[in-house]
Image (cartoon, rainbow, N blue to C red):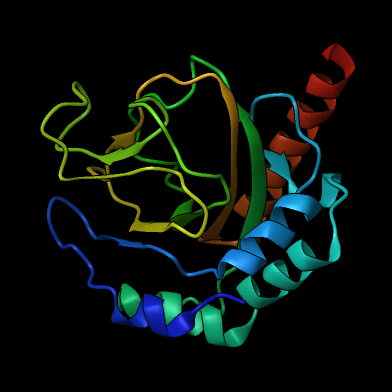
Amino acid sequence: MIDLEAIWQTGVNEIPFKFFIAENILKPADLDQLSEDFPNIEQPGAFPLQELDYGPSLARLIEQVRSKDFTYLMGKKFRINLTMKPLFISVRGHSRLSDGKIHTDSKSRIVSSVLYLNDDWEGEGGRLRMLRGSHSFSRAYAEVPPTGGALVALRRSNHSWHGHLPYEGPRRCIMFNWMWSRRVREVERARHKMSSRVKRILA
């Protein structure tokens, strides 16, 4: 399903931090099936995979993300061994206007990555930007619309600034992040689990 060769052939940017953007890593037929099998998420925020119901094509995608081949490849891109590091997977289906603020990601993460599963994207809002600092969206090093099959991955650091301009509406993506330890993964999983249940109660 995931085109590993396309990821392997994608270069890694070293400035201002290590990141890469691999586009079209999923075939159109797979994107159509994933759209049908994507969980029904109408609330904003990230939901742990374990809290969601989804179809067989998404299950196959997740199985590949968890595979040794994919983990090895992602580690090789950033010249770090991820094979013994715990993986945390979460899903987003809806963006609110307050989402996308400039940030570097939690220090508990080693590599952060997001795979987008949307249709063609119009407008400036919701397009992820790799940035020079924490104060402005201008002069971005790179920008990627969240169209289906686009994979963005970065090596987390104190200057791995990224974010997107405000957007409200459906914005589907799967986030898979390699963590420093199982303990911090479970802490993040519990936090997202509690948040997702509160969102459903308030919905």
